[in-house]
Length: 432
Image 1 (tube, one colour):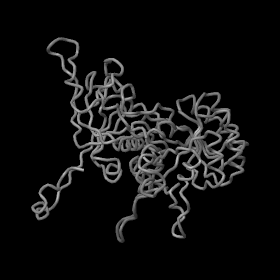
Image 2 (image 1 turned 60 degrees about the horizontal axis):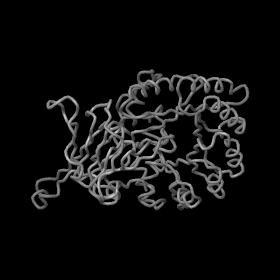
Image 3 (image 1 turned 90 degrees about the vertical axis):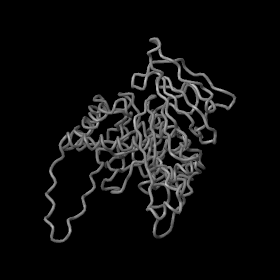
Image 4 (image 1 turned 30 degrees about the vertical axis):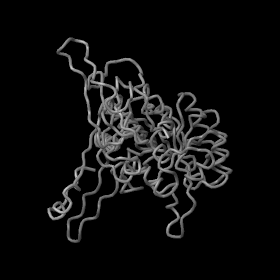
């Protein structure tokens, strides 16, 4: 697991002081935080990197800034009672569909709901921004969303997401995957043109679902050519149920490895995991959508966990949220810790591997460097109220999120009981 910090023999010095362009002065000190291994530490951040980690109190006071006696000393945040972790990332979302689930029908006798109208670019941008901020509030400082392109909407959805991405700069990193429906034949001419336009416009990756095209092999060929021209990764949807088709897909994607991701692979069976492991392809599962945890088989019986099968084959899977209150999952939450909880509670992975699936494995899918709570690593951190990883996944509601060395989100949850309970248990009204 990657939640370990510096050895307890003293601070490990990292990069020298650097101005923090995002605020809080050049230095941020996170004091008294608990690491996943149980140690209580102070973490000093300079710019967008962790500068030093030591036992609580071992780093001394914050250094004075240049400018004489009137200069400030940065910011100190007391994280007593919090568990400090590498920040999670959202590896697979659909923000262009977020909050689009049909509203509840009116009660009997109430007037009918007005007919829906075409969604404006401003409204779509607002929903994408709200979705990204929702995920950020849960801790995801880096996020990847798949976006539909082509057809009547052209590049409108992508343009709205790119507008939101610009607005979110400094708060979170938002990546986009351009998703055309068709790419082959006459019907795919628009998709082929739009895909190349999307990658020139700023889409991070090329994606889609080959199984929806009449010629899946041709679809992948077009995608590989476009991604090669743009020098970008590929992130595809597939169920992976046909091992022969999966083998052909892996072979067709060979020119772009290791920058290839498949998901959710919910129908994957033998020998699929071994095939993907040999091909060096990353896999993203969607536990909140019931993928890869066996939930699909209810009520006839739970099938073996696909995540466990991937792990046995040597694939460290990433996990994403998928849907956020859209038609596919009206109750989606976009909480990476919920995805990790589902993987751990369902027995698919142990606690450490489950959290790693939404943290450093998810970051790897996004092409980002790993995070450890140690000197020199990116200051992408999540502090969760709790004293253990199990407690954090089970119900860590109070959270503090650090992106590029800056505190970008803080959530405080306070639990209160009725007077009769409070009198009997006066110390049980703690924050959670």
